[in-house]
Structures are given as C-alpha cells and as structure tokens.
Image (cartoon, rainbow, N blue to C red; front, top):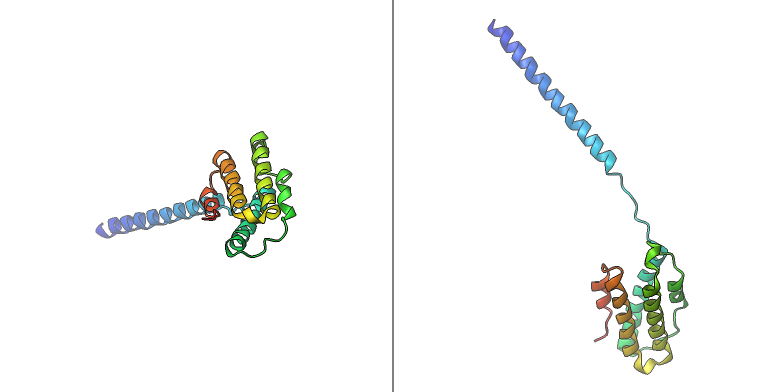
Length: 147
C-alpha cells in the first residue's frame, strides 16, 4: 500500500512540474511575440536636424580656430519643407523660429567678423523652438554655444 501511495504522489509531483514548464514556455512565447523589434524610422525633419547639428559642430570648430568659414549650406533651406514626424508641429511658431535660425546662419557667412555672435544667435533660435516643440535635444544643442 505504501508503494502505491508513494507511486501516486511521485506521479502527481512529476506531472505538476511538467505542467509548470509548459505554462512557462507558453508565457515566454507570448512575451517574445509581443516584443517584436520595431525599427525607428527618422522623419525627414529629424534627419535634417541631425545633419545641421553635425554641420554646426564643424562650423563651431572653424569659427573657434579662425579658419575660413566657407559657403552657407543650402540643404539648411530644407527646414521650411522637410516632412516632420508630426505635421501639426509645422505651425506658425515653428516657421518663425526656422526663419530666425536660417537668418542667423546666413549672417555667419555674410558677416564673418561677427560669426561667433551670429552662430550663438542661431543656437538661441534652435533652443527657443525646442523649448516649445521637442525638448529632447536641448542638452546637445546647448553644447554648440561658442564661449
């Protein structure tokens, strides 16, 4: 009798452990299906702003070292037409700030004697817009200032 009871208990224990493993596998499968990797696709405006940031890092170094400044990058003008992640963000405020940014950027090349001042004014325009629209890049933008 003891052997039968022991056999039944052992069987129950083994079956219950197998059941838990099956449940765990099901849960893992459901979680992995939900966590499908989604590739982030940058909007045209985000890509343009990344390029403008890199261009301005290089320009900052040229201004600081007294090198020739070169020509105004015409791709900056795409700021007026580039597709944004959220098109509702392309409002009058954005358009005004974008125009101020472009104006200051152009002045760097037209008035190289005051390039530092115009450059920092362009950074100001970026910050004013990003304080209202998208605050994420503010710490990066602040690093552009020329002391």
